[in-house]
Length: 233
Ligand code: CA
Image (tube, rainbow, N blue to C red; front, side, top):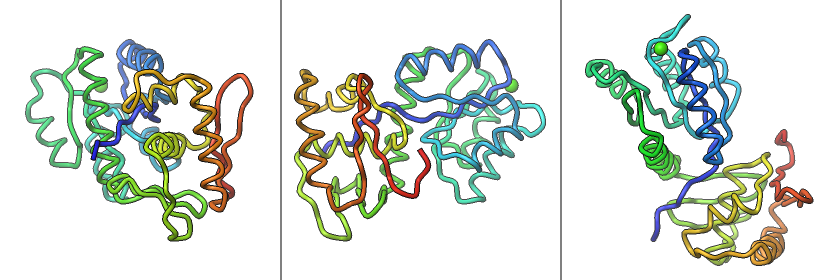
């Protein structure tokens, strides 16, 4: 069974060096991610308590609270969001300490954006597999490891692309996903996927998850938005 591919992540960049942060944010946005940035440890600590991120890129030397404390505090709260440490080339001890404190991986500064993207994908995939577990929304439950979907514990049969589409929308809940982003996500299974084909998958998926109380809204001219009752959009 193929490992789920992850694109379009919600990423928190924690970095006090403005030029590095600006380059990271613009590159990651260009790669299709939703990116938020904070420049100190206390703001990072608050952001991680208030919002759900798929990945945190964490600098260690930060004003107000250092990166180790941010990491230790989030892990103590039971927050298992994958963390990628942004570390200086010669800071071996920092990296070891960071990994011991619960980071998933690290990358040296200055970094190559392609390498960073590859590490982000790997860490996010591991996070998804580890979370494990399951992704819930409304009455629907998706289990990435088993690639299974159920509504009220009743299994639902989905074709591979319908599953990929649902996973993509669930991981990006509350965000409008363009057809191009969805296409990107489903490229695992097909290099060529027309907009009409995506419309067809959305149509089928809507029918199949009808009982889940999830709604896939068409945002005309933009794409699709998964709405879950009782969750803010
Ligand atoms: Ca720093």
